[in-house]
Length: 239
Image (cartoon, rainbow, N blue to C red; front, side, top):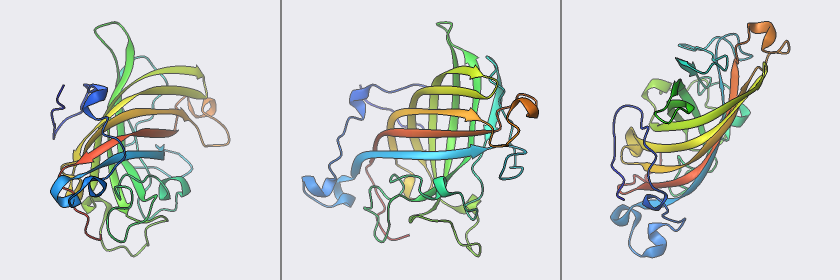
């Protein structure tokens, strides 16, 4: 099966595993330059996301989920790139293509701007979270973005992902979920980026009083991704 690239909308179809089981070897290891043959490999990612009245303040466009079996869109966000969020400052080796970008380090700083999903019933009768993530690549090195950064988050390069996941609300304070994702391009150096893999996480409340005291809304979340990526036209210039 050949994977079809999609530029817009949420990618809901999960490709066959063989389409992206490309291994971790770089194009340089196979002969020729990365620009001639592209780059491909494995990556991992960990992120934290928040909504309104979270420890990190009220974030724009946030709509928390309460664990219901229908509805949405529900929207979570990472804080701005200039905010010091230790987990997101050390988010992933994906933005640097495993440190192939000149002058980069891994892991790199990135934020989910936003993480959004709906809860819907599929044709088979299963209830799933179906959504999308737009990652803002803050910079290609670890650590927080300087407060005097001249490039606003809206103008930074993006990586776009579609996902589908099953979930289980454990109790009033926790909902767990897991599923599959697909990378569907982005902006800047990530325009031709594709990939797929697994995604899982949980929603909870950072606030000391817990979710029950906040009306049963799950105000914060954490998730992880593991998978493969491929870019046939990589920009490996420093940036």
